[in-house]
Image (cartoon, rainbow, N blue to C red; front, side, top):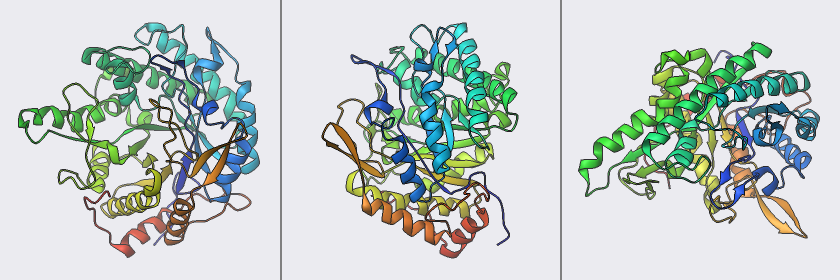
Length: 414
């Protein structure tokens, strides 16, 4: 198989939960602080290096660095130092559900402020991190719009379908402006636009909801990507180059039964309405024909290793069908709390164990072992060498593995 350079230095990526939303009844949240990532940043990046992972999603907390349009990025310095020390390449999340208190996302100033902030962020991080440089301007625009526009979980706490649609479009507009601002600083910067890849089916006793479920699966899921790619709302001047890399988030609860007043209900693993993930990946690729990554994925509890196996198998089956897949992001690297209850989800490469007022990182060994198994099967490194950025992933190895294994997509997500 001839060498074909990938976008990233390693095929497996990771990242850290970094939400900064204003949560219903709890005020401003800072998940980097809640997971003690800020206190353990050197340890966390050392862990990724030891696992052969050279790319990590890392948030820049817009609400905390932007004070009325004036920026202070000094809180990033410990993260940048640790990245450089352990040679981890960041994908910078510029807005992970949170925006400054003095902004209205429906107002014109929102786009202007986000554009200015994105430019300033790029000016700060680009000279401090060895390239190439990657950004996610606004994380999960579609899901953000549901949380804040229709379900009332987060600011701006709206509760109508119209508000959701308006919020989604406002976020798309700001995102496109931010891409242009970042590329004014670094014309070679790459964008990873991330949203959930989902399937919604009607309840068995409500066939009248089939059209609504179909619309959410094949229209709402892709609407933000469509706008950013220039397929909708041409006045916002999106384009395939602005969309750039399509990041699809894949979780078991992403296959759901429709509820008229959401959120929807997750399908059980043995539900006959589940659709193979490989089919969904192929559909997304055919829609845009852009490079793709699994932007987030993880199992829960004891199921993490099995979930990773399923995800890689489905990904390779989709590669065999021609999708241009550049990586799989095991997210998060360390555990995170359930936003609603605060209970640990046990979805990270490491669990978090409270010990003497700190959160100790404890690798979940079956998950690590499964990662090692797939690194070897895909001819990937299991630990980073002296200069992991010198050679990008040879996608020929990934295609060769797919051809060797001849995996077929299936509906078994158990």
